[in-house]
Image (cartoon, rainbow over all chains, first blue to last red; front, side, top):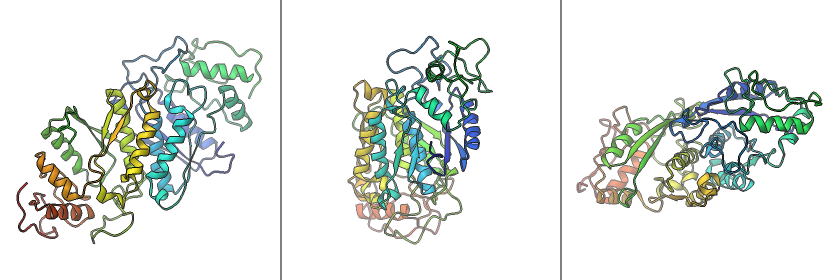
Length: 218
Length: 218
């Protein structure tokens, strides 16, 4: 969406010890496919802290369906850390716009996906930097925040996103194949179904839930 | 100061590729000397971004005296990154208090040392975490923020801080010896002079500026 709006995109991933590190290669592939200026991966050893099924190998990723409340896959302060590192890079690049893909389906469960959090981070960021002191205004964009998963997929298809390249699964294997049963897989698959678009996700054989009968290709 | 107030202290340093990495060992030594529960060092490759004399070897640390404005040693969004990682660890520890040593002398030059920045970060943090959603309030303490360097040194002496263990220098050598001429050294040395306390800093031979004649020992 940022590319479509004409932004020159510098893409950032953080290797924070996540279980689904397949997303790092997927991000690199997507950045290239979408014509981004560059894609960087910074290393931060957040897994030293643990506290999440995504950063602590001793906590299993839940696979029994989405439950109310904040899930075990919540990584403490993750979006704050991601946005802070993005803010540092934005300042070096003299960029005034940061995009993050938080969205509405998640924000009932993840505190740092809520609109009021995004507003508070933007306000803090506009006090934090040299650019802010010098009068520049930084904008924090969350273009997916009010969209359902189905709407995100539909919009992605309109923009010719190749969803075979994307990884949502919390425990994707090294080749990026999805488990089909974690919350992220279930929400993604339900999104394709609701959008009426065939799900091109590569699943680990025999693990996928539901089906996409009657769907059209993206 | 946090130890004196009765807090069980979990100390955090970030190895972000800083030129003065001697401060990491100094922090470990100080944490031990002050009776902290633990000290951790997380690695974050902020130096990949550059943009500061402290993270880019091609930008020299200024040594000609403090100048008005934001100095070359400003690291883009550093305190935001440090506090974000601290917030992540605090949540894992179920801690509701984060301390940071930003102070008044610096905040004319560093945007992320200003009181309004600290207030904005605290507000954002109280929307960012599971603990916040569950009703806990996180407090961000900056007990040095209104103190001069001389007042900080005097307070440290009252609390029996061994200032021989501390490193302020932006280009300290591997053993922690200070250059004596960078802004951090000048401000520190002036602080000891103003406090009337003998400066125990180990300087690289022949580089220190000023003197501490007439000062008393801490």
